[in-house]
Image (cartoon, rainbow over all chains, first blue to last red; front, side, top):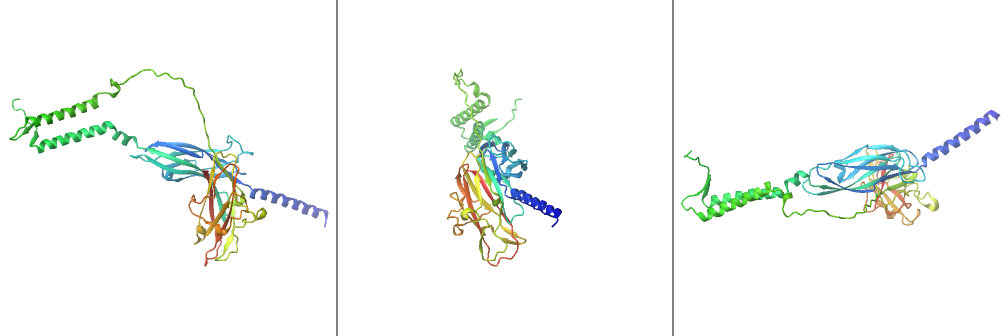
Length: 195
Length: 203
């Protein structure tokens, strides 16, 4: 075997070895996701909106596209902006404050209600780094959301003490008129003939 | 306007009813024209107190890490209908331990529950239901003897909170798990694919 062929074989072998190390590094990379805050209790008036900022961060080894999804009772009236972000990993060793996290703005818009309602749900930060696998694993962390929706001011005003008293008085007047009629009285308007 | 009664005009009844109307009118007047803020029963003055301001901002984090093996679970490629097979890394670790595990990152400052859910295996129009996959977990060790197929819990399409993969994990703790697939008898041949999700949230 000539010297040049030997060199080519050696270079090829080294290249292949380096390639395998590189591929091995990529394949064995771990993934990690975090979210803050981990649990939130909010109160909002029915028909109005309430915003919440969630920080999502990557504790894995590589950039990862992470989507935020609303689950549970809150899903129908929740808007998320942005829906997904590609997030760079946190520097190691991991420490606070979060350096590369992204902020997602979540807006809750529950409908008008006449009574207090409690909605439970979660905001899940989901990464899907395994497309094409036989049984691919998605990774997720969730922030638990408890949303207390108070009666809308429209209904609250409608059912205020003042309005209830007025309603009672109107009912009383109607009852008096009915009693008068049953007693044989009649209410009539007469034109004064003297004028 | 007048209130009249045919033949039996009762002055007493008229007096009572007219009095009632007057009471009602007085009530209406009091509601609309008397401002509650000017009530004579309202006392005003100065409240004196000394206040030391205290403030505390508490932020909670939940963070989990997954090894690469979690992301690509395979049950093999030459499976027979009716067989129950191990995921390929169930016993591939040291001491026949499982390679599948999830750990709570040290950034977490709350206890963490881990749940699992999954979708059906699909190959074209053919399906193997998610419930044909079973799993078992342990926080004790990667080769915990309790992680055997007979203890397997069927995978559900919504996160299984009744049987979580792990409960109350502290930062730095790890949960190990194994998975098995029961191929239904008479299952049509094909390359089936599916996915599962493991989720961490505050306990």
